[in-house]
Amino acid sequence: MDLIILVVLIGVVVFFFKQFSSFVYFMLIVDIFLRLFHMIKDLLNIFEFTTFVNKYIPTSIPGIINAYSTGVFNTLLILGYIILVAIFEFYTIRIFFKKN
Image 1 (cartoon, helix red, strand yellow):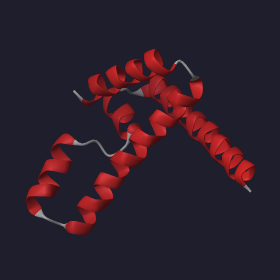
Image 2 (tube, rainbow, N blue to C red):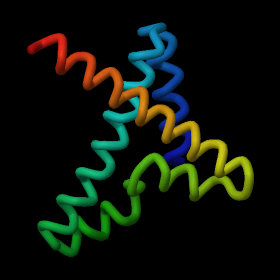
Image 3 (cartoon, rainbow, N blue to C red):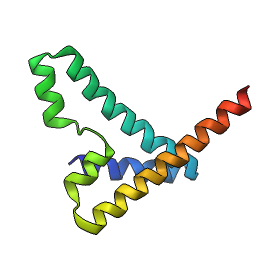
Image 4 (tube, one colour):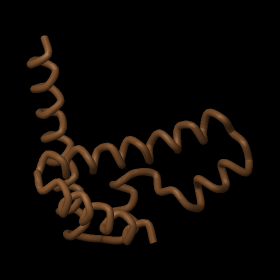
């Protein structure tokens, strides 16, 4: 289910924003959001919240990729994710130096 939701949200972002940078920002925003939920879960250590997060929220985008693919296809998807992170870093560093 998490893969379907992610694919639909990616489709909505690509349809409405039509820029590659919007896709890159969206992917990393989602990944940071997922990782943040798991960090809060570990910090709070509330049984009900921990159970909810473990059951319904994936750990990260690589976690979703690893859950639904294997082999060479998995490696290619993870490599694509790494390239997206590198592009995100480039955009972020570019914005940082333009502001200063």
